[in-house]
Length: 339
Ligand SMILES: [Zn+2]
Ligand SMILES: [Zn+2]
Image (tube, rainbow, N blue to C red):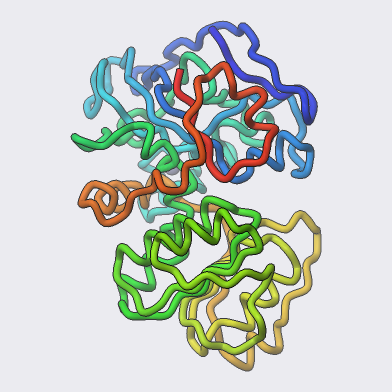
């Protein structure tokens, strides 16, 4: 079967590899029908993230179930399903408490599309994906939803959800600040989700005119800059998707007392300075870590299903699989590939 592989940064090739087989009665095989780029894919294929090849690429997607093991109860051949990027058993203590990105049954960081770092579970830019815990991991695509529109629900959309939704669901009408730039789609999805859930104001800061336009269309107040004008502690919810020392510091200093600041951009430094005294004085909650994609997926799909949030406004282009090897190396906010 085909699989898009990055051997070295900048070198992406469609490679013939053996098809996966079912390795247990709770597993299933899924044929990807829509695969989204993750905000990390660009840095990975350009060699800007410390993740070595070879990498079987693709970790956000929707697929059609083609074969199920004898113990699988929730999905059947022919079903369209979202394939969360993280491998999770659904039964360990972490999975049961919603930490599906930290499943205890599989090695740490087990996920599709990250090569050896993620445990070599394969990639979704391929003809077939093996899903080890089918009942726990897969969620059927709700009727009426376009797989292409929701391909990113496997990772980046729930990653955005966790930055704003828990706090808005507790208390709506909070003011939100999103600093965009690096986690390009996550910042925009956060804007859309916040607007859909009902919020005070949403301010979006970025130096890219295309993303500023999308944020504005989603209802945000756009500010063209790499970081907000000044520390003002004005926002109860702050999302740092900028991935720079400056955006991180600015995000922390923009969060109001008792507010929630989430860093999703990832800064690849062993030690990154943060304005701890400022944060301590203000008393903010700082969140960092990977999303728990499967745990938040039902709520994400419900929000999209009820028409509140349309993730497709963030998509630049929908392309055939064949163009993924070149398109991934070009600048983009969100690409969707369909076989
Ligand atoms: Zn990702
Ligand atoms: Zn688990």
